[in-house]
Structure formats: structure tokens, C-alpha cells
Length: 265
Ligand SMILES: Cc1cc2nc3c(=O)[nH]c(=O)nc-3n(C[C@H](O)[C@H](O)[C@H](O)COP(=O)(O)OP(=O)(O)OC[C@H]3O[C@@H](n4cnc5c(N)ncnc54)[C@H](O)[C@@H]3O)c2cc1C
Ligand code: FES
Image (cartoon, rainbow, N blue to C red; front, side, top):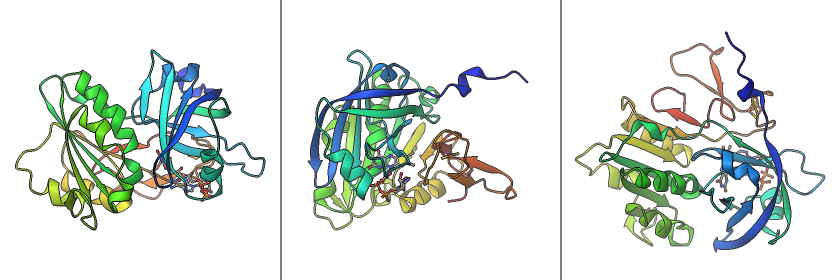
């Protein structure tokens, strides 16, 4: 077996913040610039060092949009606790130590011009779907997005996704769009997309996994607590279906994207 040198190269760069703004309560959009952008793919993530010596572990954040011409990448993240709170205070011109792009990314080669893709997102899982929608749209794929949120305040990126196709928005409490979960909309569809790309909370992914278990091109983007973020420490393992405990996959390196019907959720 040949040695895959490419897999061994860990990319890292001190990137510069171009801008940062709050796009919804506690949800920030940060644009970064650097050479790493040229390597980035939809569905991959950045492993970001929090500029605080007490925060040793990097924070994994998905790539939301890539602009290779301008050399810029956009991330969208929610302030959870101390690390993301520190990130949210940073300003244009500040530097960030970024490792990545990490992970496998979404396989967009399974659909072509004239085919249809269904994008399913929930909450802070919606960001990686924006670049996915853009690239599919540019290929001539019809993109339909169904995105769900807790309530009106939490709705993000609807307009960005509308640039590339139809968007259905659901809220749990009905304060915006259709009341219910993404399943409320998807269960009414009398057609099946040629490819399905999803990212969101565990409950949502479980629904997508079951509903599209046997679909040949349906993908889930998984989240796990991470440490090294590059496949070495096995902090982020998930289990494969119908296998023994020994058959683990690392979300950071083998994922974060996995086909439906293959992993234990
Ligand atoms: C592949 C991947 C992509 C992600 N993409 C996004 C995104 O686009 N936008 C977004 O808002 N969030 C995203 N997350 C979740 C994000 O990493 C956490 O919200 C963030 O690390 C929390 O940091 P904190 O310092 O505020 O919280 P703390 O709880 O103080 O963090 C402590 C430690 O736990 C880890 N941790 C905490 N929550 C999570 C979590 N949900 N997943 C993994 N590690 C966690 C932190 O990285 C850190 O190492 C993603 C997670 C993964 C694994
Ligand atoms: S975080 Fe270390 S192997 Fe995935």
C-alpha cells in the first residue's frame, strides 16, 4: 500500500479577520483571509485556536462560504461558552491561528446538471449548507433547502440560501415560516432528490438518517467533541452500524460527513 503523503500534511496559518458582525442574537459571522482559503471545500471545518493561553483545545467551526478569488472564508458560529465568547470579541485586523481545512467535506460529484439536491439544515448546522448550495447551483443542480430553527430570532442564512434555490423555513414554535420541524415539510414531498446533504442537531440527523437510510447519495455532517482535530487522539470517535466496537471512525478525519445508514446515531 502506498503512503499517502497528502494526508500527512497538516495545514496551519495565522489568518487575518476581515470583518465580524452579529447576524442574530449570539450568532456571529466572521470573514477571514489567508492562503488556506485556496485549499477549502464545502463541508470541511476549521480548527481554530482561541487567543487565550488558558484555552488549549482548538474550536472546530464549519466553513460557511468560500471566495477563492478574494481569498476569503466565512464562518458562522454561536457563542456557547468562554471560547466562542472570546472569538466574538475579535475585530477586523486581528489575527487567528487556524488549522485546516480539516475533514472530508461534502461529495458534490454525485449530482450533475439537471438533477436535484435537497439540503436539510437545523440551527447552527445551516452554515456549511451555504457553500454547498452555491457550488451545486453553479453546476446546474436544482437546490431545495429546508432549514429549521427554534424560533424567529434564531433564523439565519435564509436569504443567502435563497440565492441558489427554493427555501422552506420551519420554526419549532411557529414564530416564523412553517410551524414544526424540517420533517414537517420533507414528509409532504412526493419526490426524492438525487442527493441529500444535511447538518444539524442530533435529533434532526436521526430523522434524516432513518428517512433516507437506503438513499445512495444522502449525507450527514456529524459533530463530536474534539481535541487534536487531525485524527491522532481518537477523542472524536463514532461507531459504525452493524460492526463491533473495534470499527470506529474519527469525525475529524474520516468525517465529519458520513453517508446515511452507516453510523450509530
Ligand atoms: C465539525 C464541527 C463543526 C462545527 N461547526 C460549527 C459551526 O459552524 N458553528 C457553530 O456555532 N458551532 C460549530 N461547532 C460547534 C463548536 O465547535 C462549539 O460550539 C464550540 O467549540 C464551543 O466552544 P466554547 O469554548 O464556546 O464552549 P466550551 O464548552 O467551553 O468548549 C470546551 C471544549 O469543548 C469543545 N466543544 C464544546 N461544544 C462542542 C461541540 N458542539 N462540538 C465539538 N466540540 C465542542 C470545545 O471545542 C472545547 O474544546 C462545530 C463542531 C464540530 C465538531
Ligand atoms: S479529535 Fe483527535 S482524532 Fe479526532
